[in-house]
Image (cartoon, rainbow, N blue to C red):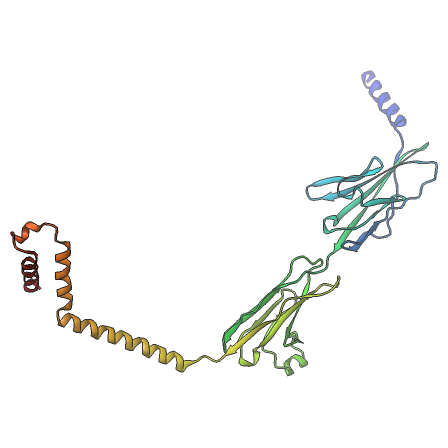
Length: 304
């Protein structure tokens, strides 16, 4: 029992000798800050301390790969160096870019006679980016009754853009199933989120000039260049004529081959080949070339 007394005494002394560390209430005007790209953003961080307290202020950025300092030892670090300034205990970021988006944490510690007090506040910064010119895909031609899909996409905007299709300069209606949509006899499906315009059965009435516009409420909307789609009926008579012509050419070629074979043109051609590829002239048995050619040709025709 006596051996435990020194341990109890040490714990007792340590408890009363530890500095007083208590929580501190930190406030912010806006926990979710949104700012347009290339403008400024203010991240507020407020406390209620007496002027006599010694404060230590740190700002950190919380990312998936870890936590990094933004403001440390009374100076800014990293990408904010030269672009940010302190507003009391908050910060103002000038010329924000999309890389500045993320979660920031303000940490304040205060020392006083009563001990040390700690507090923090978390703020999310979202940088809003205007859309860029979308890329549109519109087929130049199509046959009636076929399926046609047009697409429109841009990837820079934040928040993501919505898309509106136009035909001949007039905005197309979105098929919602309402009475107005049914009255307009809409034969297509327009998806404003994905930017697709789908014709399940395209008709000649769908011929026209199309373009798409991307917008997300930030800056000016952007549109792609106008592209024309021509819809034509399937030309069955033309297809039939082409098939007949191809068949006629094939029949004529067959007849020509049959006639040439019957007249022996192929056998003569083979005799000429024998003459040209004959390498051993001893077969001529000392005859002249013309005599040898006659003998070889006659023997070839007899064999044929």
